[in-house]
Image: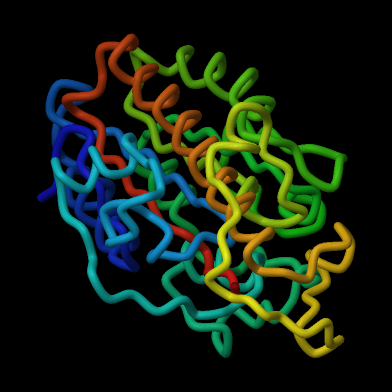
Length: 274
């Protein structure tokens, strides 16, 4: 079993819920049970994470998790779309079973979710998302959560999300808890804050690039960027910025004194075309 700030980057999340929730149903509180922190990061390619082989991308927090724990080398997302993929992550079901095929269809309240499993085992449950289409009224993802932090903005950066999320998380220091936090930053538009906006220099790996509509993603077109040599450095900057904020989250677990009994599960919902 993974322990103490270890990472499971894969689809074994439901098994972790069964082991920690149902499996410990007869155990005592806090001293014998593990907290579970599920971190989902939007639109993040594995090969743009340091521990997956792209050495020039600075991701020390994520790399540290991988070094301490378990890194899944092969993992296939159930969908290239955010809400369907998260529905699978939260239920362990394929799309044909949970019936969420887009970002407008809510997850049925008949579905059994991770948060409900943990809540039924006496865990405090805290959820937080960083994009409007993931808010419970649209997604149905509020099931089983005591507290759920959402946003009415299209998206918010991890630094903003962490302002209230970390404060709420610290309130759970004396509880057994399951918490899910979603970060949106690697999704376009690509606009990392300083100094991450200039951390990676544009190259010429993809020159020449013809300006054709078939090559212009919706994200790149909205920023008047069609050259991947300009887009990719900003994408890398978003990932490094997010890694910094994940580091803040992990430091909060240490501050709370619960890092040694918290299972950290980090997974992307899907990748990016690039």
